[in-house]
Image 1 (cartoon, rainbow, N blue to C red):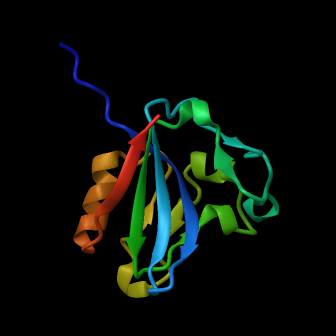
Image 2 (image 1 turned 180 degrees about the vertical axis):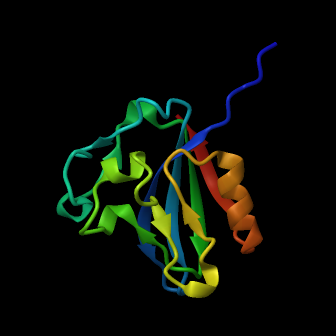
Length: 131
């Protein structure tokens, strides 16, 4: 029996800052990383697109993550586009805090790798759903 292939990180969406000072994100995973793409993902830089989001057909699982750490995310970046993430030039999300220099997430990272990085910083996945 063939082992099930692990889900891969396709996108991190910043939802917003909550009243308790925590930041909320969606970590969006796919089982089809080779074809994963965003609506208007060809635009560069990403900050030029309002509501940058993955094409629904490629979203397999979404996890909410709530943390005190503010991540820089590609959706708000005014220098790079989504294609730069798929090419491995820039991360989907990262902390610019020098003490958290290991807290970055690349396009195509495995779900277990993402979870391990978050767990190392006492951050756990929240609610999720499958499509």
